[in-house]
Image (cartoon, rainbow, N blue to C red; front, side):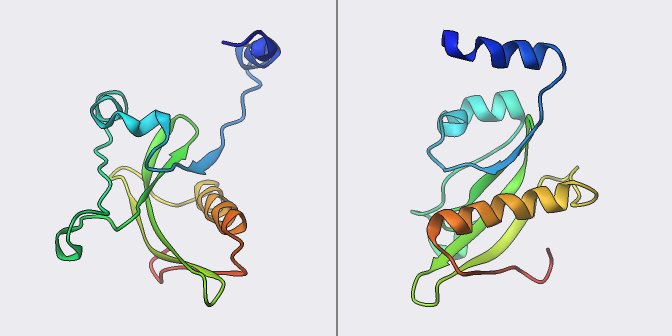
Length: 129
C-alpha cells in the first residue's frame, strides 16, 4: 500500500467505505488470472472474442460487473460508432443476483460510465434489463 493511501485505509477501517459498481475490462488485474478469480470469487470468466459466435456463452467482449466486493454478473456491450450509441446486447447476472433496489441504478450507472468513456450519445438496453 502506498503511503499516500493510508488516510483512505483509515477511513475504511472506520466504516466509511462506500462500495462502487464498475464494469471490468477483460484485462483488469482483478480477473486477469482467471483461475484465481474463480477461486476467490466463485466467478467463472473467459473472454470469448476468439470463440465462434455460435459457441459463445456470454458475448464477444463481455465485461464483468464488480458491485462492491462481489462479481455479480457480466455485460455484453458493443459500441456502434457510426450511430454514436452503446448497444448493450445482454446483461448476465450470477444465479443469486437480482437487479432490485440500489443494484439496478448502480449497474445502469456503470454502463452509463462506459458509454461516456466511449463518447456514446445514447445507450440501447436489452428489453430484459
